[in-house]
Image (tube, rainbow, N blue to C red; front, top):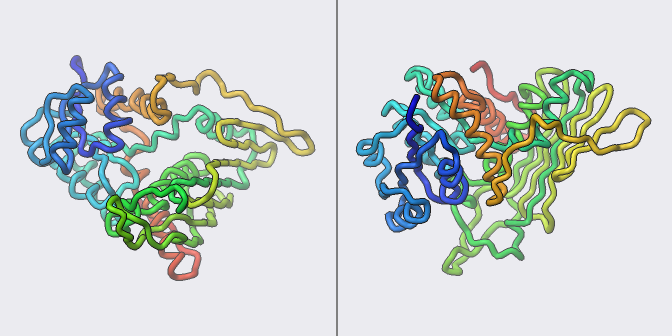
Amino acid sequence: MSRPIRVGLIGTGFGRVVQGPGFLKHPKFELVALASARKERAESAAAELGVKYATDDWRRMLSEVELDLVSVITPPVHHHPMGMAVLESGRDLLLEKPTAMDAREARELLDTARAKGRVHALNHEFRWVPERAALRARVASGAMGRLQRFEARAFFDFYNPHMKRAWGWLNDATMGGGILGAIGSHIVDYARFVAGEIRTVSAQVETQVKERADATGRMKPVTADDGFSMLLEFESGATGSVVCSSTSSVRSQLFEAHGENESLILDGDLLFRGTPGGPREPYPVPEEFHIHKLGADALLDPFYAFLESLAPAIEGRTEFRPNLEDGLKVQQVLDAARLSSSSGRRERAGGPI
């Protein structure tokens, strides 16, 4: 493809602050159109990003604008209808996570993308965070020996009641809200990336803060989860756990991979290595995993690295990963976690793709 890849965005939240700037900065892409539920929001974002076409009708954008790739960055309840329309229109698809409302919707998106021969991508951009990429590569190299355990802890304060964050769609289960989807999808994708496919899940999905004031100050019920715990069994025989809360008083993230020969621990953005009987020592990130530092929103760097891999896949019409197959497998784990939380049993995480 001699010209830039023409991009349209549906959604101007994350799209405005991360994806839009990422596409603008990357020489292989040209951001040409924006759609938002509110016209004034679309026009404001377009003016900010220097995009000429803005609309409050995403279907109109698909019919009026020459596009190669459409990115859907909306609440999950809209992912299936919008993603299907994009694929049916003959465009490649970039879909924000979580993939859909359930595995049935995710499977239909994957089947359609395959049938239409479209390049499809899931925005699990954190795979490109250098420390995470280095940890995964060390496991994949076999140097750690057989992987025995994968552990993840993620604590955030943005839904702590003292933070006074207004009620929004993330607090509404009917919109696909909830921390299991918003953050758990990233962690599950990384768990699969490091340790392989997940066979079974035992989970507790919870809502600690039962109501929250909206932008007008009116109290509204919170129907979506704000935290979860999962015990995982991997197809390889490794085991693991994931614990996440958005109502903590601090922010911290910890990932651990424990093999027969050594362990790697990612504490925040610091990576450590330990061996049996030895101390925990810093583990330097190899140069090959370093990414561009763009000096803007911290999320922009891994998204730009994501685009570095997406561009040649679109130009060469080759498979990109992570894609809708990865999205379906993550969705199956999320579905199993919700089912396990209600049934009280360990549940199978999906089936054949």
